[in-house]
Image (tube, rainbow, N blue to C red; front, side, top):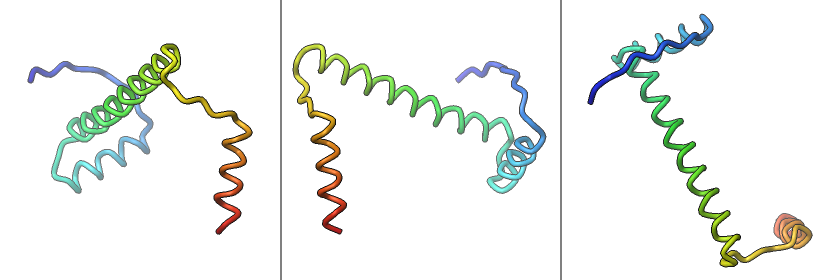
Length: 82
């Protein structure tokens, strides 16, 4: 996989933390940052896809809608039992 260079600025505390993690895992700072960014991008893409799917479901009338008051009542009942 080809690699591109991206310059970012981080505060010195974060840089020190990244360096400690890299040292602890026997990796480079760059690989630690790559792993973190990959996880962040994966999670954000998952959220965007989920939201788009839910919006499409609502628009197409396939979603079951629950009134806000019913949700609150369900939570109150669930936690009142414990």
